[in-house]
Image (cartoon, rainbow, N blue to C red; front, side, top):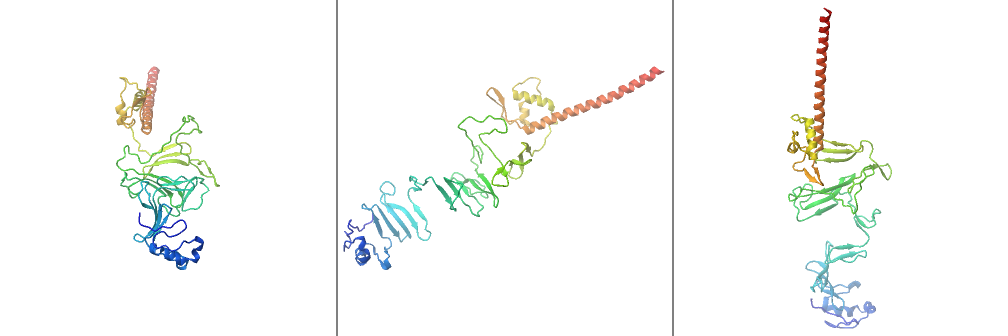
Length: 376
């Protein structure tokens, strides 16, 4: 600790240049004595009733001289120092205020609104934290961020472990962020960013865990562990259900919408249609069922490997679970196979109809010939 000058409890200077014991009520009438007492300590002055302390001089607090203020002329900072800033007895700055910018640095934790001070960081009591705003009636205890007219991220999440290349979207060390979906209309856009180290490669996960059994209702009143709900304005202050043919949920590939789910409960997929011309489609449908039931026989023409090659069953996805065969089924391609089977069946039936009609004509012609022969 730096050398200092001290006072006794009756305000008598005990080192430096002692002059006179002053009661605080006498200061106004004895400024000359105070200046003389402190002259060799800090070079103070009381001009115009303002006590001025020279640069880089300490003002100590407490009988044990545990804290002291100093204006550090070298760094142009006002500093509050402690004899135990780290809990291990080391001197150090507790609070630093930078001159010019008024930036404040603090060692240790900060508590506000009646919270218990943490070892580090900030603890807030049961209250609101408002950024760029003064009130928010939607919050009792929580955080409000008023972004003003800014259109970039209102919240970002970073990690030194992350280094993704898509810096046109977010900085390389950002793994997530939240911003407005529309600059003037609002809406929420949630970003998840992952670099090449992801295993598995997932940029955004939505997780829902229940502390109770899941709902098993299979009606329009059923709910899942994760719920996605939509609505539109009711022209008042509330909302109502999406109207007829309204799109509820879409999935795109970053350029084009590929799936749409609408208010009627219909699913729409933007798919590239394919046909299985080389297959006996009806037979393939039968054999697909055999594969998924785990019933294999010599009568089967098509097998699991065939359906995996065709993209109807996910590669390597067939497995046993609770005594039953399960697998990832591409229902879009399965529907195409069903369509092909129906079309093949329709074509075959039409061919039969044509053949029957042709044979009917031949039979009728034969009857006419027979009738003529009988008439002669």
